Amino acid sequence: MKKILIVDDQPAVRELVSVTLEIGPYHILTAENGDQALELARAELPELMLLDIQMPGGSLDGLDVCRVLKSDERTKDITIIILTAKGQDWDRQAGQDAGADDYFVKPFSPLELMNKVEHILG
Picture 1 (cartoon, one colour):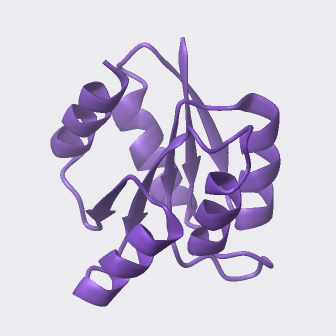
Picture 2: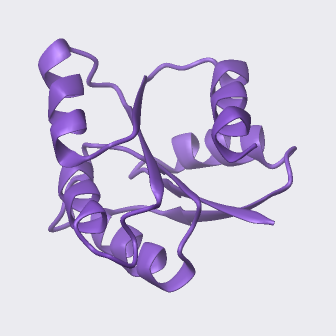
């Protein structure tokens, strides 16, 4: 089973994404902040991470997490999709600069997200 790590500070978003993806052959992991995301990513080495940018209350935002994971030899191959409400061109560029593999803007279509995940994970 392929692992997907969902990282968002909002429980409702984590739940929506989890429920959307649970119909596939995936093992779903969740984290509510950047620190948890790094810890889980390093321990579990998921194939895919869906990562929010804004996560108040922690020491790392999503872009920080992305940069750290992409610069680490053990975790650099995790496919990271930014899943955020920040949809301006400069936000997308910041995600790309941090090393994100793709960018999805909230609100999102669950079907579109499922199709994207299936395309990435085969």
